Image (cartoon, rainbow, N blue to C red; front, side, top):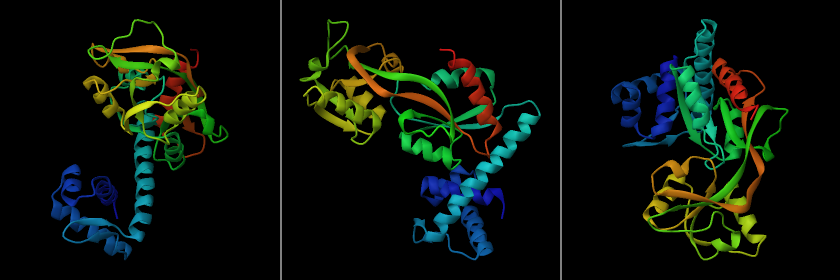
Length: 295
C-alpha cells in the first residue's frame, strides 16, 4: 500500500467516474484500475462496485475511504510540518466557509497569498454544521461559520463580524431612491432566497415572520452563484449580507441596507484545539488573529 493508491481511491470518490479519476491523477484508466485492484488484493476486500461503469463503493470501501482521507491528511500535514521546520509555508490550506456572511473570505486569502506565495487554497462552501464536522474529522484546516453552534472547548475562535443585510439588485432592472429600506418595503418585490434549512435563510425567515411578512419568493437555490445569475438577469432581488463583496461583481450591482436587519449569531474563524493540527493551519490562524482580532 502506498499514498498514491489512497489518492486514487479519493479521486474516484470525488469524480465518481474511473476515466475522470484517472485524468485527475494524471494516469491512464487501466493504471488506475490496476492500482485499485492491487489495493483490494492487499486488504483482501472488495472496495469498489464495478459494472460497465463506476457504481459506488461497498460498505467496506466506504469505511476504508474514511481512513484513506485521514491518512492522506496526515501525510499532507507531515509535509507541511517539514516545510515549516525549514521556515517555509507551502502546501494547501483547506478552508470551509458558510456561503453568505458579512465576511468576504478573500479578506483572509489575499494577505495569506501575498505573504506565502507557495500556499494553495481549497475553499468549500458548507453549512455551519458541515464546517464543524469537517474540522472535527480533520477534513478541514480552518472554518468560517456562525458561532451559535460552536463549543469553544473544542475550537479556538476569532470572532469576525455580525452579519448585517441589505437588498442586492441590478440597477438595469430595479431602481430605489432611498438610502435604506424597511422590511415592509420588501413585501411585493420578487426575491431570490437560499434553500430552506440553511442558517442564513432561517434567520431571514424569522425576521420576516416576526413582522407578519411573507416573502414573494420567485426563486430558491442552494447556490449563491445561481442567485447572482438571477439578480443579474432581472428575475429577482435578494437580501444579502453587507460587506461581502457581491456588489463589486459588476458595475450594475448595488446593495441598499435594510433597517434592523442582522443575524444574531456572529461569524468566526475556527481552528481545532486537538491534535493533529497542521503547521499550515496554525500559521494561517495566527496570521488571521493579527489581521482581525484588533478590528
